Length: 160
Ligand code: HEM
Image 1 (tube, helix red, strand yellow):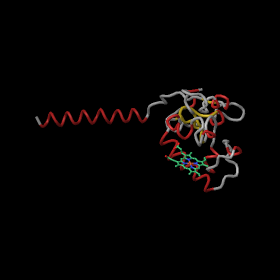
Image 2: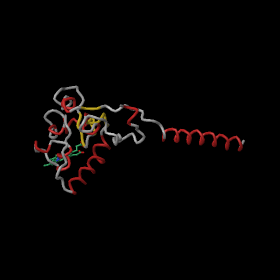
Image 3: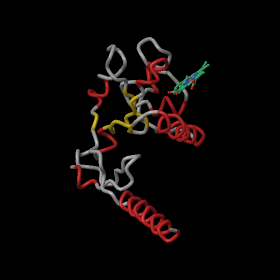
Image 4: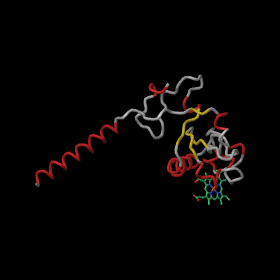
């Protein structure tokens, strides 16, 4: 009887472990969606019933469940439908900061950006794609260094 239990335990453990190993080396399961600026603009919360998207550091988040922050007439509506990296880093809603441009940001602002990126956006909202400027080089060729935030085993050759 005891032997049977040990065998059962062994089988359960072996299956669980082999699943983990398989998962660890699994190829990317989700294709990556690319958003141009124009496409991202369609998800600015102005249309009732449409999802609301916002990009930070080139990752496009579905912030629809934060409608009270980002929806039409909500306080942070200016941040959505675009990449608002600079605004998030500076905690600013100045139209000049509603851009992905991080030129000249100081160390504190860059640290704050990373902590909001990890602690708020990645923790709270699903990623639905990436901006063209993160996925492509300036000449339009694929950016070979691209890695999705949530798919560490992603191989760029699989997707392009
Ligand atoms: C008087 C100034 C401000 C006050 C009193 C304020 C207050 C708040 C509060 C209470 C939250 C709530 C969080 C929660 O319930 O989880 C929040 C979140 C947030 N605030 Fe502000 N805020 C101010 C200014 C700003 C500015 C200028 C920005 C510009 C980027 C900003 C960006 C954000 C963001 C991105 C969030 C996270 C929303 C989310 O969880 O998706 N805030 N703020």
